[in-house]
Length: 183
Image (tube, rainbow, N blue to C red; front, side, top):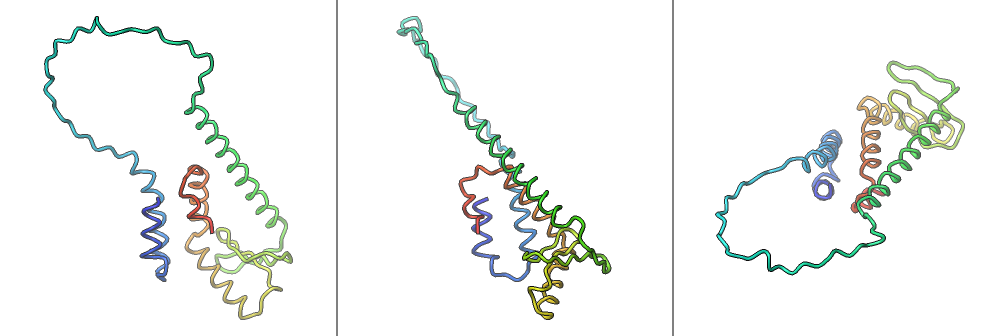
């Protein structure tokens, strides 16, 4: 993931081909999941060398009985599962808040899009084919630009991209490079 991000940062970050950037970043996510499962096996035959070692002369000591032994793999797995559960709860809470914002609002339909004009101080966004905004915060020219921008997001299924990246963030939350994604 870090290599894909570094390549994106230095090669594609300032490009205006957003569709290419989108597919590159999505391909990077899926490739980072697939690559660890690919295994290249090399078989090397080594002729054993005969030894005349007397195994009965090895010193033997009794194994000490440890009263408490921490299984760190189990501790890390538990922490990982708790992290995933907390992030899933946060995702569900975000989804609940989104539905609460959208529920019962006046919807205007235009072609393939639904428009919801809110009174709350909220940044414009699109959710699948629904575009949400507060027209009182912007001039008419700004609103036209914002709506065109959000229509493009809607038509290019930006919500699917966001959901995929949220899924990856939830599943791979324990990532030492996660600080790179926080902006």
